[in-house]
Image (cartoon, rainbow over all chains, first blue to last red; front, side):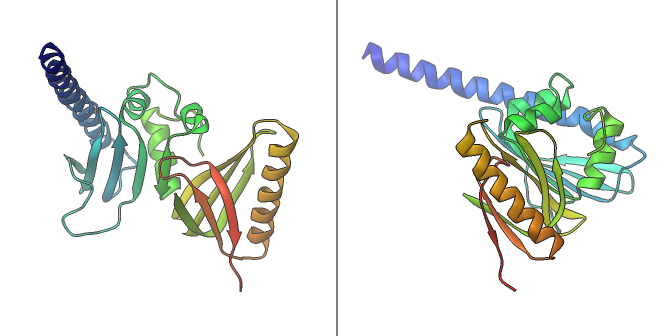
Length: 135
Length: 83
């Protein structure tokens, strides 16, 4: 009986941790949206994140007319192909966006995938300080 | 396992253990993948043969299919498509 209640407690804590991590991921991406809105390189199109781990989920940054909107779904309303797609561990991607970890080093270590218009990604990442040098 | 197919748009040998390859149908629709080796002779030889196959495909405009993990950019095997 005691074991069961301990297990239930762990589940509750895990759910709470996941919820708080998800809020943090959305918070980080929200800050990224603000930066994107002031970016000179911003183009109309979507940037999609496929994040795994505790702070994972599917997120889409849809930019149109210099305004970016964050939504927690990978699929766009009109089914258009994203400009950039990124796969990786939620906490690692979050650290990269926050400037706590070096993007290139993390990519070389493995566990991150990126696909799409990489020239656009390079320009954007350089401007936002995510990359130190162009790809 | 995931497969990325297309032309080799760019190939950069960064260090003796890391090579970066951009694969995709067009220059504005590519995926960055890695060929790595752990420094052992066997692994280095395998990586070198993959890089040579990719370089050869690049210069001959032959499509390739790179196999890698769903959540990782490291290429585990490569196929050069027939004409």
